[in-house]
Length: 361
Image (cartoon, rainbow, N blue to C red; front, side):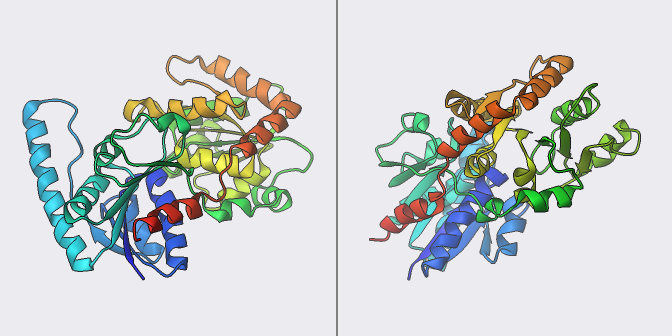
């Protein structure tokens, strides 16, 4: 069988979908390698998942200054030449770039060697690396229809979605209630700011948990570095009906227990929300390239699967009131959940693997 490289990373939104595709390719008998930054998420997760890892060293694109751009161009050339040598040494047949600046050198190197190459864009607004790599890609995998004309080049576009880990579908409400120590028969709102947490979202969760007249239970996944701070805000102990966790490695439990999820709008998170059919209040991170999380969030809002709350300039009391109002309308939350389920692409990993395999023919 063939040797295929997954290239890219930096965030879970790049790494985990790539590994989901890689798992399918491995099931089909291919050898799959991971090329990425050894000091970022992929450098830890890919080897843990059983992938042979090859380090790529590259610079992020500078936001200003001529000399910075010259250094970037020279660095990209060096990284591409190094990736070219590694691809030849590994006898690679095809490369799938999944975004993040580290994906560009292997994809460009594959093009220079005449190897198969494809890219996967998880967000509505494509990142800079994928904009560059789209010019040499033979196949382009998309998550959102709105992205189709935002990438250059003439490669065919395939709407496949974002692959999700099947484990997120395996939680049950009964197990999840026990996992969090919550009562049956009362609604649950889950707050989660991603694997690292989000300070403003945590502030909203604490204020909501303290709200007078709150009738629902709260699961608050703070991010590891915020857990002590959140508990201190609660006086050292979470109040009745509130469970605080620094980190959750079983997100299936969080989704299974939730009537409403309040979270960021990364592509992987939205793919999981649609896969499990959960209503969400999306608070896009303002600290991402070209505000792409708001683009993602608006796409779910447009089909009635989510509501969007923009963080910039919000008043905390108003944001709390928004959560309270949403959580009080369980019928509306069920309708939102059904709309989310209608956007699910549970076959995304296999559809993406099919396109990657087409490069080998």
